[in-house]
Length: 435
Image (cartoon, rainbow, N blue to C red; front, side):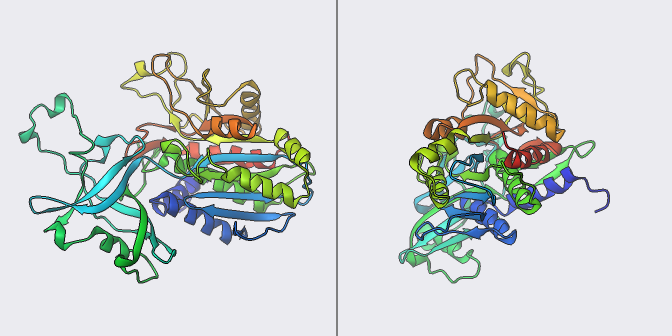
């Protein structure tokens, strides 16, 4: 396409990444595929790792850690970490998932995280995730359009426009076919969706499967300034970090004091991060310890390296909503395409402090990227991110940033076309900049 800008190229690639990533397991797999194509080596956590310079990654369940060790790196070289997450609010398939009544086939699902329930109504949806066989082998599965949460017609609920109330158990059971549930099995449909393998549904021992929207990402608006997609919270940050790390690795632009660049894409952030692949778990520390061991670091030298390290916690934030401006801080009104957010909270729901804010201002200035400050209305507490968790676990100074969104936690979120590319540009500079 003629006259493509870097931001347009980036947003189209973000759309491709989101489309390939209907679940956290798919996101980790797609990120790993792209890293391998860029010359990164996948390491096995069960095997010993050779120390020294290079480009590597691991995948643990739905999480991915990737890193670049420069030639000059030593036992006290610090880490520059961009942290993000691969999961998004959705619905997860329950045990005994094939249900139904009155001639309908339905799927039993459990709410995952905090989705905007009404945004999932009357959409064509898919199932995606991993199937684990009784012999321990794993398969990624992703159906085509399969399910729908049908809304009750206004003729049967005349007051619906005065306030829609959805019961998570009674009303959020999607339909996926017609028939007697005793004669059908939604796991059979999932098994048939695995590419490149013949999967016997009777051999499925366990599964982690979520619902995802099937509508393709799209650029729109009066001047093509908007980008709509599912799972922008937080694949926008995961993709920005991935693009930045690959660009950093391919540029070879590292001075003698450059840090070890790390992308940490955790799973389970939307439900508190308490898992072996979440930010409360040991995955990042496990990798950092093994990197420093490979560089010959003592325990004391490893602590020196962590003290010299910095983490940019990148997660989506809120743009000011024109119809609900009173819900935002009166003085800070981030807008789409106004630049990535610097997220601030006095109660450390975000990890940003003054040194972190100064670093972010410096990086954005050097990258020629505008940024915006976000702080919540005092009467409406904000959510949190992996930032405070990483800072608390490892003692690494952390700053919270992200792309501004409308409709956060909707089945289909909205950002500006310019902002994801700007975040990636600052992230690339962060990966190679010595502090």
